[in-house]
Structures are given as structure tokens and as C-alpha cells.
Length: 577
Image (cartoon, rainbow, N blue to C red; front, side, top):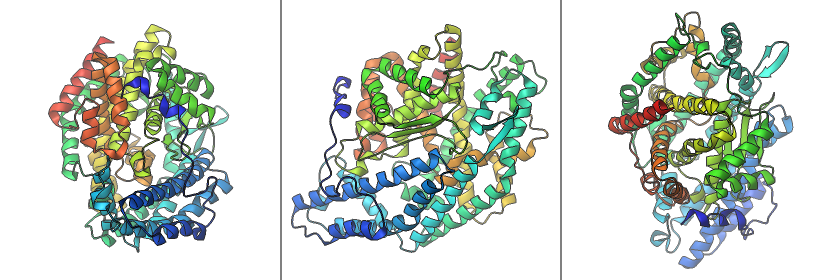
């Protein structure tokens, strides 16, 4: 499909519900169970009726996913709202356990329906593979454990969302405090760094205990499903058919060999430019030449207005995606007390247009986050008319390719945020340096999870030793943490993926490599690269990772050779700036 045809994904209306009445709410478990029972009891005599049954089952899934989505969105927008938290908790504790069991019953019935094994529409084989995988790992006894896991993971958001520091007589959020680390006043940076890390360290014991509980619960889930450990269970549960744990270990090695030396050079250059005898952890965000931090926008409204312009310049369809979301009130992007940390794009299958959540505080990083989540949003929109809910939820390796590629391709139009050519070059340079920095951090977090779940009987002390060893392996060795060793020991506490979505992180590294390759193609032929990108995204989950990457004009390859070549391209772009 040519990019000029994509506007229809915005203009066309979603089909009305056929099975679940529009406006229905998952008010209680019995009401939800009734819809599953209708499908379980429905007579199915031929392939056509199987297809209709499958479509109605998909509609049921979409309805429930969107009901949960709005509860999660409202809770994270205000973690202090007890009613919103109670609504989300009710779904997790009362609705989801019932759904897990009934969904398994639906899948068991589906594989017996007439013509199921002969379904030949796009994505049918991937659908079959995933259904059989789900049936293989499902265990009734894991339902209450999964509920407990989700409830505990919610504690992380509550603890993080409640964090703030006092700064110059004002209580400010952690994202706002983090922005002060770009200050040219070294003593100011030092003070805010110590306040930030000290506030996080205040909850270190709670977070250690919480994580230990989660590790123990997840290991029980794996054992119940017949796996030796949670790592092997996760690879199966996440449908990682295209790569193995060993491939991840190889990725770690490749990053250590091909990227860490570049990071060391960056840190040495930073120390020299700042004229410091010792590079400290509060010196890592300030501009190397002592310039004040870039201010990308004035407030959330300004961020979004400029974001729409950037996307529109890249292509009008992309700008229209953000405009369509804005018209529906699907943005909450400014940081405030009580708001959960981080950022996300939450797909809304039935509405057809996702929701973007952020904690913006006027920094370059916040601007890039909008580009990133905007890429996810475009992905959601170009898959909104795929026939089954399953096809709209891609593997993470593909989802993050969408977002990270958008970050890089959008750089041609960042003058919207930075009209001054000097600031523009600086913004691009800082972002490309961050792209390089991303890979070692991804390797650290992923390698740490491999260690944690394979060595599931570890103590907190052993976990700390492992963390320091793993993070040290990918460190430049230049930054001096003297006096801050206790902060470094718990640096992983800030990574919400460890608590909420285990093993969802290596995808960022794989997708970052893919995004660089997409950007490399874009530099050579913008129209073709953007067209290939959208065509790949529109496949959704009807195709495997390798096919999606191939459609994007790139390869799914994280060998040392490929990483080295891509890093050379990024370095050349940096040198040109």
C-alpha cells in the first residue's frame, strides 16, 4: 500500500459491535462469564460458522481489554484517586481470574471447531501457534498467583507515584527534579542528585522485599506450568519463536564488545570537555560545554502542538493520527504529583485510537518520548481494522521498532522545537548519544533478569552483588561513584519493567538496532523508507518478527558485525553534527 492511502485508517469508522452491546461495562464476574458461556454453548457446524465464532470471540477480548485499559489509564493518571485504584483492583482481582479460566476454555473449544486447522487467512498460522502455546502453559492453579502478582506490581506504581522531593521551598515530582540534573551549576546538580537518589533509597527496603516476593511468585507460576524457571516460561509465554535465551546472551556479548568502547570514549570526552578531575554521576546530563539545558517546549500544550507539526511534516497522515487522538481527549502528558511514573501508549481496540500518557517537564527527553509514543500510536491506528484483536497486539520487538524508528526519522523536523540551528544540532547530537547509551542499559537490565530468574533462590545480598557485577560489565569505568555506592546498588529500582513486565526489555535493544537501520534507509530514500515502515506496521501480528523487519527493508540481526556497522553509521552522523 502507498502512504497516500493510509488516511482511510483515520477517516473510516469502526464497525459497530455485533456480539457485545456497545457501552457494556464489565460490572461483575457473572456478567462477564455470561458472554463466554454464550460462545461455549453456541453450535458451530462449518468453517463459516467457525469464522464468525472466532470474530465474536475477538470482539469479547477487545471489549474486556478496553474496559481494563480505561481503568488502568485513570489509575495511573492519578494514583491518589482511591476510586480509580479500587476500580482497577476490582478488575484484576474479580474479573481477570474468571476471564483467564474461561479464555482457556474458549481456546480449547476453538481448536476443535470445524475447519480450524485449515484456516488460511493472513496470520492464521501465527494465531494457531499462539493458541497452542497458551493451552500448553495454562494451569488453573496459576490464576490466583497471577492475580497476586498483578496486585503486587501495582504497589510499585503506587510507591513510585508517591515520590517527590522538596526543592527551593517547593514540592516537585521526580521527573521535574531529574531535569535539574542538566543545570550548569555543579553544586546544584550535586544537591538535586542526592535528594533524588536519597528519596528513592528511602523506599529501597520496601522495593527489595516487593521484588523478592514477585520473583518467588513468578517462579511458582513457572514450576506449575512445567518449566525449570521463570525465564524459560517467559520465553514461551511471550511467544518468542524467533529467538532464544542464548540469542539474548549473544546480544549482551555483542553490545559489550561493540558499544561499550564507544561509551567509554563518550565519557572521556565529557570529562575533558567539562574540565573535571573526576566525572561524577551528577555530571552525566549536563551539556558537555557548560551550556544551559535545552528547553524543548513551554508546557504540555506546546509540546503537543509542536509534535503534531513534526508528524505532519514527516507526512500529513502521521500528523492526522495525533490530531484524531487529541480530538478524543486521548492525551495526558504533563508531570504532576500523584501521577504514576513513565510513559506509555495504550491501544484501545474498540475505540480505534490509543491513549498517550507521559510525564513531561520541558526537556529534550520528554520531546523524544512524544515522538516515541507517537510511533506506537501510529502503529495502533494502522492496525485498527485488522480482523481479530490478536492481530492488533504485536510482539514487543515489532512494537518498539515502530516507536524508535519514529524518534530517528522525525529528527529532520526537530527545528519545530529548536529553530536555532545551534540548538538543533545539539538536540540531534544529544539524542544520538542517548541512542548509543540505550544499548548497554538494555543489556544490563536483560542480563540482570536472566540471572535473577535462573538463580531464583538467591538472597537480596547475592542479588546486589550480581547487579554490581553485571552493571560493571557494561560500564565505561570512568564515572566515580565514591560515596554513592549505596545508590548504585539499587539503581535498578527505577526500572519499572523489572517489577511490572518481566523480560520485556531486550526488545528495546533489538528494536533500537532495527530503528537505526530504518533511519539509515530513510536518509537514502525518505519516501520509500517511510512507506516500507508503514507497510510493515500495518501487518500487525499477521506476520512474524523477521517478516515485519524484512518488509521494513531491514533484517532482524543483532550480531556483533551488524551492531558494529550500525554504530559506525550513528558515529558518522554524530561526526557530521
